[in-house]
Each structure stands twice: as C-alpha cells, then as structure tokens.
Image 1 (spheres, rainbow, N blue to C red):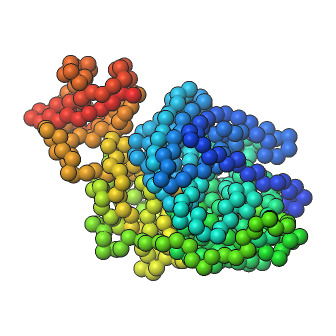
Image 2 (image 1 turned 60 degrees about the vertical axis):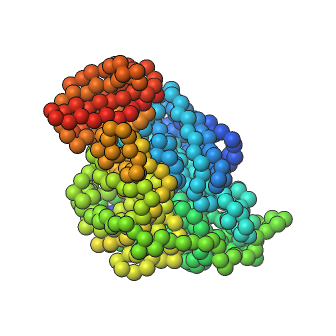
Image 3 (image 1 turned 90 degrees about the horizontal axis):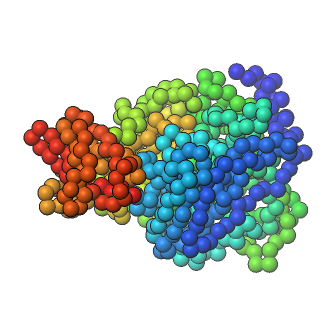
Length: 554
C-alpha cells in the first residue's frame, strides 16, 4: 500500500519526467492497398534511450500500420506468422464472416500464412486488428502485436471533418506498461509507464484548427478518465462502431480496456499555446481497475491524475476545418420491440484485477461448450448484470450493438451510437440490443467476453448463428452435429446430442479414411492432421442413433 507521501513523490516524478523528456509522438504509417501483407514477428525497440526491449510487431518493431478500408470494398489480407509460437488475427469490432473472424480455435502455425477476404460492411470508424489466440491474447497484444483500422464511408465523407491522417487526424493508442529492471515487458494488470502509440512522454504538434483524435484505451486493465487540463472542452463524434447522431460536448470521458472514441478539439486561435491530455485517475471509483483500491495490485499511477500527451499548437494548414458540425450521422438504434428474445448474463466472482475468477451465469471458458445459439436475422437484447467486485468492459464479436439503458436510465449521449464494448460497473444492469442479420457461423463459433486482457482467457464464451431454414437430405440443422473449426489443419471439435461410440471419416466417394473410438460422451475431438486437404464426411455413431456432417481439411 502506498502512503500519501509516496503518491506525491510519484506524481512529482511523472510530471518532471514529462516536462523534461518530451518525445515526438509516433504516428503509425497509413496503408491503403488492394491486399495487405501483415507480418507478425519478433523485434526489439528502445522506448527509453539505451534500454532495449523485446517486442512483437506487425510490419514494424512495435504495433502495426493503420489500415485504411472503404465500406463496400472487399478487403484482402495475407497474415504471416513469423513468431516461434502460434498466433492469429482478429478484426476487433468489425462484422466479418465468422470463418475469417480469427477467434479461437483459429490458429496460424509458426511460419504459416492465412489468407483472409471479406466485404467491408461496417460504418466509418476506428477498429482494431490483433491476435485472438487462446491463452496468448494478452501476451501477444501486450508485446505489440496490434494495430488500427480506419473505415471510411460515403456518409462520413460528406461531413466537414478533419481526415488528413497525421496532419489534423491522429490515432492515440494509450497503454500503461510495466518494465523489469532489465527493460523487458512484465505481464501485469498495471504498468507504471505510459506509452502513446509506443512513445513515452509524447508531444504532438497540431495546427490551430479543429483536430480529430481517435482515442483508444489499449491497456490490459486500467480505466482512464480522459480530459484536458483546465477542463478544456471537446466533442465526442464517434464510438467503436460509427458516428453519433450529433457531437456530444464533454470535459471528461472514462474508457475501459478496448473502448474507442473519436474526439474533436477546437484549437482555433491557440497558435503558440499548448494543452495537456490527462488521465484523472483520482476520480475513479474503487470498483474500477486503476483506482487506488488497496485490496488490488498496486501501481504508482493508481488513483492519481497523470499526463498522457502534450499538444503543441502551431500554424493552421492551408485548408483548415474551423467549425464543428452540429449534426453527424443517421443513427437508428434497433427498436426494443423488435427483439425476438432477451438473454440475461450475470457476472459473478471476486478477486484482484489480475488474479480474479469471474463467471457468467456460473460458467467460464470451455471450448467444447456453445453457450448460446442465435437464429440468423434475429434481434436480441442482452442484459449484463454485474454482481462481482469490479467493473468489466464487455464485448461481443459480429459487429456493433446499441446500449438501451443503464440501470433503467438512457445511456449518456456519447454512448448512443453503435458500440462493440460496454462498461458494466459493479451493481450495474446494462441492456444492449444487437441484430444478427449477416452471417451464419458455419463451424466457426464467435465470442463474447470481458475485454480486460487479464480476464479474457477465462471470461470468454461462445455463440453460434444458425439458419433454421437450411436442411440436408438426412438431418435438419438443429440435429446436425456442431463441428469446429471448419476448415482445420489439425483437430476438429464436435458437439452432438447423443453419446458417440465410434467416429468415422469418409471421403466424398464414400471410402473410409479414418476410424476411431468415440468418447462415449457428446463432445470430443477428431484428429485430421494426417488427412489430405479436402472435404470429408464425419459420421458420429451411437448406440441407437447416428449423424453426419461435412468437415474440411485445409
């Protein structure tokens, strides 16, 4: 536990270091290509002069480039894993075909390449890409394997907004990092060093006009109450899934891990001046990671106010944006009456930020369990109720949702647009509404989970989206065994409605290519690593019942 003198010294050291060791903010290069080659690899980087840190990066020593996509286009990627361990790639917040979502059990083996192709159907906003590999998500993202995606669309293009990347439109990925005495990253819920785009003690030169800050909480666990020193106002124009209907004026905004917003700050008339983006951690409730909760892990940054980024204001550009639009996008949340059902998700458990054991409806992560089955085309309400001892940023794959209410009250103005992460504080009941209209999962379950990277390996659950109108000659969709992943290069997991005594795999000519004893239960694994690439029929035989379905060896 830190006493008041220790906290004061920490504040002084942070402020002094920030004042004397300013570094220009690194801006990841923006790429706009027909096909993106993304190489995940091991690197080293000096965050502090003379201190060499082992890192991961994507096409760079740390973090990755910003990818520019356009709604309606088909995006192509080749993801190369040059690590010595399995990895993957997930398109955080985006609605893509589940086969390309990148969730577990998808893996890219060391030295392998994964080809990805999907149509961009998401609204203009800022999204993420990063590995989502089971048991390695936090470690790989924490070492630097992550980057931003900016989606552009016609609706956003019609607005007079800053969008000259690196000139009046800037990404800000905020992380707290813990370093060992030798300068290596330490896996921890909290760090004592702040990096923005991988830059320690950063400053950013901005023109004296309206600028756009695409702000991301990229920390594992810490919550940030962001604001400018002196309560300089800003306007929130977008959240994770797209623009708001109108700018939301604010002086503070609290973001949990994975939450993203876009801010407009009017610097008109401030040439030669500066302002300081802060985290006002002293304002956090004791239930939020990053507060000075003495029962949780300690950090010199916990419960105090500290600087994030110095903005230095220079001359205007030749074509400045000097006013902020009063209206933005046509935002149409799904009507509550359109929901086919409501699912209640109760968060329970207690513990420290990095060591807690938390459950949802009494269940933790199990790759062999599908927690929810959703009908294609349905709109659903999910009600998150937090009975645990800390706040959790909850997220769902398959695109964006809208917040209906928090504890019976309408969401704050900045939370009324499409989102993919929602904070659920202790005692809160938060209802969100989401439409599952675009894709069935077809052997690749999707995830919903806590975005706290210290919790994600056990606070993750699976759902599938099915089309009940699709049938085969021998079985209805409801009776067909669930198999995943499809395709696979090694193992295929299965769920059936009856105990399986024997497994058989047939090629498309009907020739048996694999036979194995069943698990005598309803879940198990088929090892197809030795099969030639192609399509096969998996046959599950029980005492009185059998079922078949297609599997693919890639």
